[in-house]
Image (cartoon, rainbow, N blue to C red; front, side, top):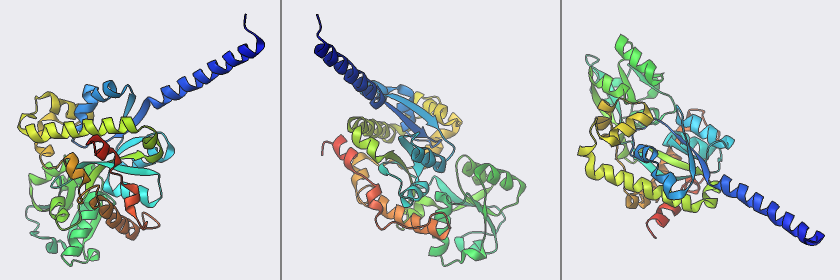
Length: 334
């Protein structure tokens, strides 16, 4: 027969077990915000391998832009998300508790400045007095401004127009603009009746790289280290599969079908579009080009640009505080 004390102990133990069970269940779930970037990560999403490896329930939620992802993370609705270097720089500048832990892709030649045939534009210097469209505060906008600065062109002498990708596509069709700095699928359409003047990759080689990255709520990541390491291992494996077998990633392959499914892209256009990106290896992620220093510098440079555009109030003294190599190092056994 249970005494009052033992009953109390039992009740206390059961209550503690219930709380622990609730905490365990909570720990085993994560909301991951993704966008429409054409990246090998989509094969992980399709296979369910990360869920199987970790036992976590992963809520994959698609967002229309990096700014939306960052806002959802700030509200606590999302723990991990995909965002371009520009929105990541904005979040860091606002002091959001995030860590960039993986370079999803080096944008490289996947964003480009295309001049319309017959526009008499053959270099950035020829943009003076021309109508150039790009989505403001995007990585493409940043690169356009960097390019003009490098060429000594006063941006005030160029009619830089703020348009979303669908608006750029329509304006291009109507002949309302002379050039555009944009990404696929609009980029491919523009190339059909124009020529590439410069790419993000060409500016990246000058020390101004742009990228898409994975960011995580710093507190959540510290509490879920095993999941983070498993995620990084899966990312490295998927990227390696693409790098080593890109020729097999055809429109009718399961890999490309997965990318198309999760991004709502046309499978036929995926292989060529993916070929424009670079996907750093795990070792390259740790290098001075990326998480080992280059990413922080890119965020700092972008933050200066965002402040000039009135999008952030201050530039932080150290953007390295918003970048971590911890999970890649652990995934590599370092």
